[in-house]
Image (cartoon, rainbow, N blue to C red):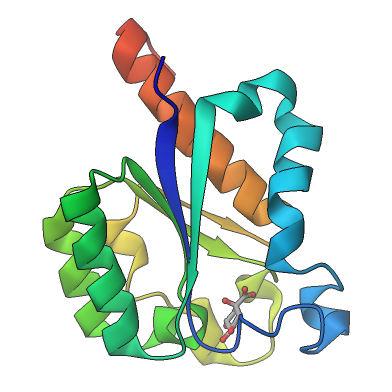
Length: 158
Ligand code: DQA
């Protein structure tokens, strides 16, 4: 069986993970993700292929999402960083591309001090949100997308 291709897309300031405010975002980097995925999913990790991409710009993220359609990407784990809270352009993009997307955050955005972080422009266009588990948030998002596809194939309930 072909692996399910999942885009792990990261927005601004997430390319410096591990160095950026580790007390909030943790010490692990995105390079640690494949290993962590295997630790949690075991052999089922072979059924997913991760495509990692990070951009600091809103346009760069939209370009990557559009490209995902052409490439037949089957799911997106998307940490849009601060654009989560502000970007109608990203929400508009997710609204048409038709690829199941899970919104991801390392921190628990609802436990953060700034009220703006409690809002998401993109959540209404996503199948769900994972927030607060550090790098594991991505793993749970990937697992959720994997389960969605397995369920679709088997035609069974979640
Ligand atoms: C973040 C939370 C956002 O509010 C913040 O702007 C980020 C990271 C997170 O992963 O916790 O850049 O998306």
